[in-house]
Image (cartoon, rainbow over all chains, first blue to last red; front, top):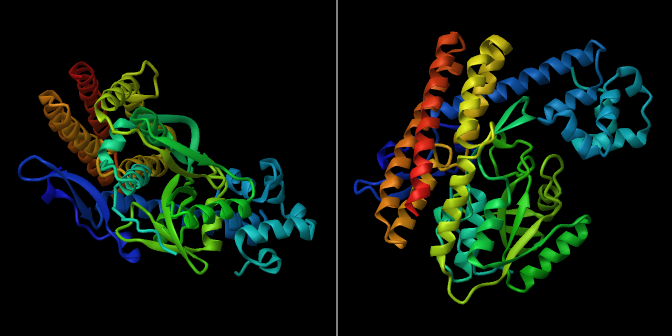
Length: 133
Length: 331
């Protein structure tokens, strides 16, 4: 990549007001570093990934409202987690977390267990039990 | 309290922290030099593992490896500590800062508040330097950022004790002893040999073979997984290749910069020539990313276009095979 080819596309980096560093060669073939504000191919990839996550969040929310899963799954998706990550944060086995997805099991969870989830998601137990529709 | 520490932006966090800590201690070592000596370049498909519900590919060595190999090959002694207790981790950090010793920390990205939201994923192998404390705020030199920043003690504790794969467990590290004179020549040769070995490894998911493997998978994805998932997977490949930290082209440009610098230092014309070749291969990786992005941008791709990008990867793999064989002989 030549110095003048270092892309300066619009990207999500703008919101944090920084540009990333790229390596490129100058007119004399010497390696230099140059800041890049972003590159469209990866911005599109990132935006698609975010969109995918948002779809998963929406889907989880619908299933919570339909009584098919517990709010824990919704908050897990909201925090871009999967079962493995959530399990390590709350300190339960993965199968246990999955069990807590069952609305019937979730209803009977002790405050102690609920508070573990609430703490990880940085919400109150009340918010965990009643997701906003 | 603030330690007199100079922040230099780097492409990748791990190289950057090592390079910045070395510079702080009076040894001028560039980012590409750390990356090359630490054998950072790699291609590896990690079977079975999924991140963000897509397969994982890495273009670099496992977190911590660059750093470990660099230290070993240059004779720098590093102190590394992990903690189970956050209070203890904080106390040890404060102790070092009081002794005027800036330290490297491994942290999780998800709760890193100064990152743009879109970049905050559960990735736990990010690195930064802490170089001071004002009140309850820690002064942070994050090598991928243009400027220094700061985090509150609570915010820092959260990222130091992030959970999930590669959980940092408060991991803190800093150099404690240096050789009298830093001799890079031997370290460079070792670093290059190691990289050639990994890239030419007789393992189906590593190095050149790993690239062919991914090419084969890409051909299958649209039929096997459907267009939507195939595009999601392809997007993740490009993100791994081009996301912040790679310096462009899946670390190939940083490696080319290393070969150029190494060629001058060792007075080895062949390395300088090979640097040019690596730059061209890096350009091909960029072309692949561009072509792949056309597929997932339009979302109406045909199997044919997947085959086309897979062909590009096969070609890159063939070129890299020849390249690393030549590189092995050049030193």
